[in-house]
Amino acid sequence: MENNLRILIIEDDKYILNFISLALKTSGFTFDTAKNGIEGMSLFYSNKPDIILLDLGLPDVDGIEIIKSIRLMSDVPILVVSARGQENEKISALDHGADDYITKPFHMGELMARIRVVQRKLKRSLQPDNVEIFKMDCLTIDYERRMVFVDDHEVHLTPMEYKLLLLLVANKGKVLTHNYILKEIWGYGETGDSTSIRVFMANLRRKIEKDKAAPRFILTEVGVGYRFANE
Ligand code: CA
Image (cartoon, rainbow, N blue to C red):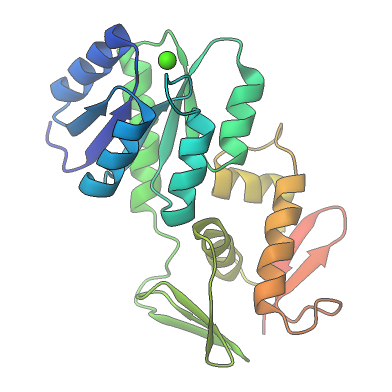
C-alpha cells in the first residue's frame, strides 16, 4: 500500500513508539518520531507533517500545551494517544483542537482505522468546487489564499475560526445544530459541550459582524444552533 502522507509521532514510551512505527511502516507511511515535546515541536516546524499522533503524557511538555501551540499556527489533524481512564484529559485535548483520540492499549487495526478517518477528513475539503472567492455584502472569503475580508480590510481568524466560518458558509441557509458543529469542527458530538462553540462563535462574530446585536451573517437559532444567512 502506498501513502504519500507524512506522519509525526510524539511518544515517549519506547514500546508504543516501536509498535506504531512498525504499523505505519507496514502500511507504507512516511513518518518521523519524537520522544518528547520539544523534539516533537521542532519536527512539526521542520517537516510539516500531514497528521500528528500525540501522547499527552510527555516527560517535558504537557501534550495539551503542544496542541495549543500547534493550533495557533495550523489545523493539521492531531490524533491523541491517551491512557485508559483519562476521560478529562481526552475532553480537554478535543476542546483544544485535537481531532480524535485512541486509548492505550490499542490494536494496530484500530490505529489504522483512525488514521484512515483522518485521511478522509483531509480529502473532504470544505471548499466548494471551482469557487475561489465567496462574497456577501461586506464579507469576502478568498479560499485560495485562506484570507477573510470585511469591507476590503483583512480580518485575522484562527485556524479553528476559519474552519467554523467555512462550515457555516458551505451550509448557508441551513440550521446547524451544536452537535453537528462539534462533530464537524472538533470531530465529536452528543457528549460534547456547546460552551466552546459559543466562545468561538462570539469571537468570529466580533471579527466579521458590524453589529453584534443584530448579526448580518451568523444568526442564532435559540436552543438549536446557528445558521448562516442565505442572502
Ligand atoms: Ca507517555
